[in-house]
Length: 323
Image (cartoon, rainbow, N blue to C red; front, side, top):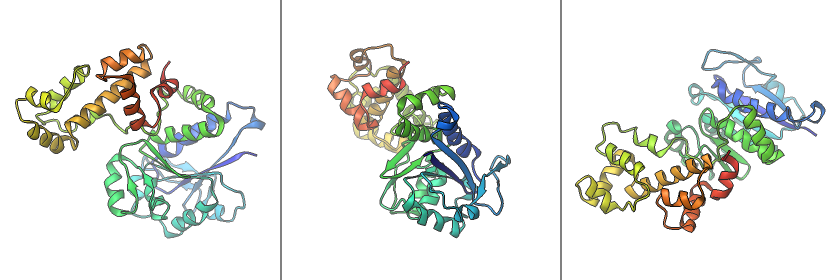
């Protein structure tokens, strides 16, 4: 029996939040003979008619309205809720009530980007870990204090509820769901057919630490951050970094907290782990070489730090990413 995938669009939607995941399931179906396709995909619009407005101005045509879905007896295997930045303050109460009541009968309930606001309003994220687009994470946390909001990962799974970050992260989440259903080989084949450079795990950050450091363009730490990236093989203690910029360790810690909202030690660890990821993705160096280049004292320390951050071992990460 085909798994029924329903994308619920709350207008105005971000078009890619709908189209991206839909393409993943469509490409997954194409890996099989038509009669053996594993998914039945439907777009349901929470509008009076089947027209689904998007923030781009490009309209989408839903297969059915939410009112028609209410009268349907067809079970839903996976529900993905997609909306847009301009819709998070005006969800209709009957739509939120439908999400709340039907979630109990659905195997997986997911949100794409700011669709997390709809799940939170329906009470599905209370007491759960969740993510959303990084620029809206604080607003989600402020509005729904019972939700454990983490602005960093590209997607988060807590029991049967999944939340994802912005735009392309919806594709990553859909690939995860396909991998769970059909196996990683099919998910990787879909990623290749969609010409995706990488298939990213949920623990991967929405944006890199080095990019984050560029958010403070006038910071006196800029040169030091560049130097750190070029000298990861060294023992980068707080005292040594403080000497590098001719200040005290205590002052350096204050500067990092003020400009980058982190500590020197955490920044170094994050940059090192990103460097490990890049090396694993290229697949040209041995683990011992990566260990030395990225400044780890042993393979065991590297593996533990990597698993703690990404939830997978370096070996498993390389299996999914290396050429």
